[in-house]
Image (cartoon, rainbow, N blue to C red; front, side, top):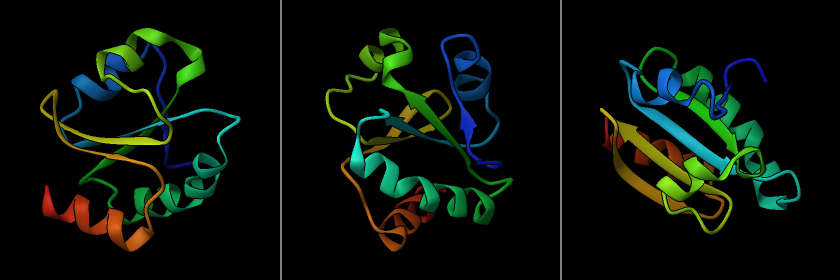
Length: 107
């Protein structure tokens, strides 16, 4: 996936907290069916909102500190982060239209 950025413990600060634009952070896991279902949609939205919103994904199995920081207990969990603060949280899979509207409402 070319437009969705993989976030890990090592690049979290740079990719999410230091981002000049809002970041939609997708908390996912390889065993999660709904997580796999929305990946293509996230790629499409990353292209659509390029330059206005950065879409990133964080595999919860790659480290617990970020998941704990955001109190993630269920995947998929989507959080829009603006200026280091959470603007919205959605748990579970959404349609492309629902997610696109949520993003647009917070730009």
